[in-house]
Length: 357
Image (cartoon, rainbow, N blue to C red; front, side, top):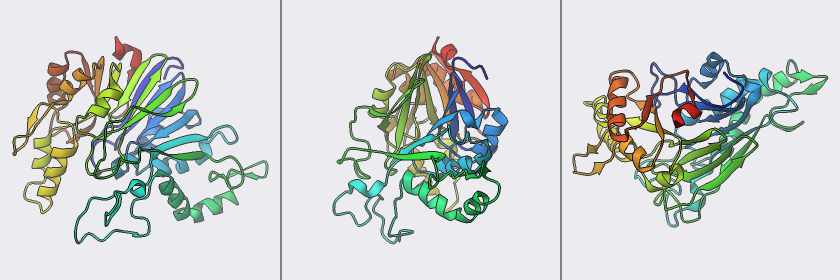
């Protein structure tokens, strides 16, 4: 990996919480050697190791939403790199959704969750934990391992390498991204100007709420670097907020789904109807698509064109098992965008400045 420039390392490129040939969704944006992770799907620790990237260079982790295929390895990635931590010098800033119930809506029997009879909530005292609660609860669940190692191997000059921050600076600081008071699970992506999230000497990060019903909050992120801008859609159907965030971006990293092929995988199964509804309502199709009820959705290439994106990287591929060939995804998107399109694969490295040309 060059020490200069901005590069995308596609660590995991499969959509959905179903094991497959690809690792779950996770991307590293490397800017002059500094590493920023976007999402932490299953397989991140192994793919990161295979990429040759240096954990000590990780500055930030940005979680788009709290579906398991986007966050499940967030804590394990950090914990498994405990011995690679630049103790005393490195604090990874983690940003993601806060608790979904904090903005209501008023009168809801299940704040932060879609109304559904006969669906008793798990942990009703905290049914919609956010990213801060996820890390806090993960530390508690791993207390034995953490406490034992702090008393044995994880010590430097007699000091415990306390990743939790109780004894010294932590390995990670976790931040829930604030959202407007009127945004909630019933109004999950109201019109929103980009939110300032993070800035250092390499990147400026802004975010917006995207349209991934019924998930709330769900974010897209934009990284502006000296070498070009990169916008990550997260999971979303094409929406105005993402279009505003991505306007003129050099690289749009957007989820993509062949909705008909995805739905067909569940034909004959009891959850067919619910999966079909989720695929149709909450994702971006590979090409222009019409639902059984006549609703039309633009394909990912058409959407990228309306964003005036200079290039498009297809990610969160679903189906990601090669039952739909990469060439099918590529042809549909490039035909609409008329610019550079890349169908991502695990461990592929892309030069942002080259994509921006």
